[in-house]
Image (tube, rainbow, N blue to C red; front, side):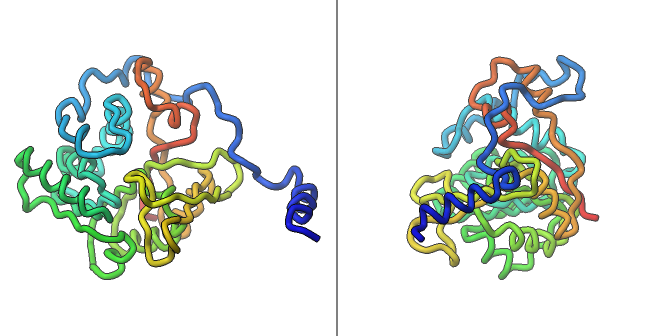
Length: 276
């Protein structure tokens, strides 16, 4: 029996049970409980710190980044005052800077690409941020967290979770930092079932995964969890999902926003976990 026949028979046997591919995109914004007009943005973080629009090749769109800042930092500002923060895959330092502006006492950013670490350090110096408040480490996040005893209060995992298949290992390392809060911004698989959508990425593009000790060649296996799978992964390491950021309100009150279709159709979310 050839492989094509096996696949066809397996597919027939599990019709109605298999989660299948990502469901058709929804064309309506996520629901919101905020008052209309309360989430209108007139000036955003990237209007105040425009250097970060130039220091990365990845999704450097003003509207997108400003609304992400609102969803990640404005809605979780209570977590950051005086906190020690770990910024996973800190890229060009944009979100480390945002955490410091929101009141974090110190940020440690870990980024695998040395050129982005150099950009992060240069940008924070340009904006005269006290160097005692930040540190960037160039290295693989799994190796750095395994080898260094980093202790923090809050972990930011922004735009990284869907670039790896090592979710349980990552959350284990997060728990070992002693963090009480975890903020995640990620693509998800739009299924009600607790499933993981597998994919593969080549490592050349700056916004893609980076080769690690488990990958072969220039391709990395990645996984996009459904929302219920993400909740399950968190619970497995003692983190309870406490809520989703109000993307419905942000999109409703900023109708001119572009480059945010993934949030609009529910393929990407921002959420908060608290340690139980």
